[in-house]
Length: 254
Ligand SMILES: Nc1ncnc2c1ncn2[C@@H]1O[C@H](COP(=O)(O)OP(=O)(O)OP(=O)(O)O)[C@@H](O)[C@H]1O
Ligand SMILES: [Mg+2]
Image 1 (tube, rainbow, N blue to C red):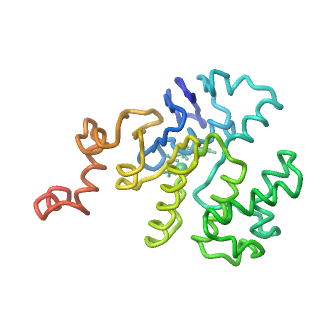
Image 2 (image 1 turned 30 degrees about the vertical axis):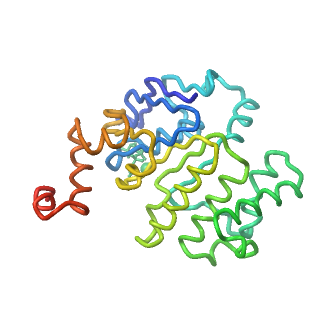
C-alpha cells in the first residue's frame, strides 16, 4: 500500500538517500534502523514531502505522492500522523488545543476536533493534563501529548522518528509500551525509526536496516536480528546479546 522506489536526495555533494526502497503493507508495523546520519529521518520526511526527493517514486495506494497537486497532498497528509524525536508542540496553546490543531486545520468543527482530541488524550493517559501548557510537562508527558496529536485524526499511516530518543530509560519503556499498545489497537500502518532492538523484535512485522542512504537488509525481525546476514545486523544482534546473553555471549559482544 505504501512504497518508495529508488528514492534519492542529495545535500550539496552528500547523498542522504542514494536509492532508497521501502514496502509497507496495510496494517503492518515496520521498524527502520540504522546508524546516525544514514538517512532515516530524510526517508521518513520524504514520505510526506516535508523533504522533496531529487528522484525516485513514492506510492500510496497506487497513487504517486510526488505527482500530487497541493490539494491532493493536503488530503494525503491529513491521513498521515507524524511523531518526531522531540515533540514540537506549540507553547502558546495548551495540550488540548495542540491536540485539536490538526483536526481544525482539516476543517472539522471545533466540537468534533475537541471530542477527538479528548479521546486521544485519554488513550495516551494524559486527559488530566488537557489544560496544561506544553512547557510545564515532563519529557514523557510531552511525548504522550505529541502522540495524542498524531493519533487524534485516526491516521491511516503513522510515522515515528525516534520517539523515545530524548527520554530517560524509564520513560523510554513507558512510551514503547504505549506505542506497542497503539500498534495492536489502532488499525493503522506504522513506520517506526528506533534503535530499540528488543522493541523491534517484539513489535515489528518487518525490520528494515539502512546504511549509507539505502535499505541494505530487511525481513522478519527474528530473521534479520537473530540470524544476521549483514554486518550491520550483526552489530545490532551483538548489542542485544550484551544485555540478554550469558557471560560468554556478553564477552563476545564487546
Ligand atoms: N538540511 C540538511 N542539509 C544538509 N545535510 C543534511 C540535511 N539534513 C540531513 N542532512 C545530511 O543527510 C544525511 C542523512 O541525515 P538524516 O537526518 O536523514 O539521518 P538519520 O539517519 O536520521 O540520523 P540520526 O540517527 O542521527 O537522526 C546526514 O549526513 C545529514 O548530515
Ligand atoms: Mg534522524
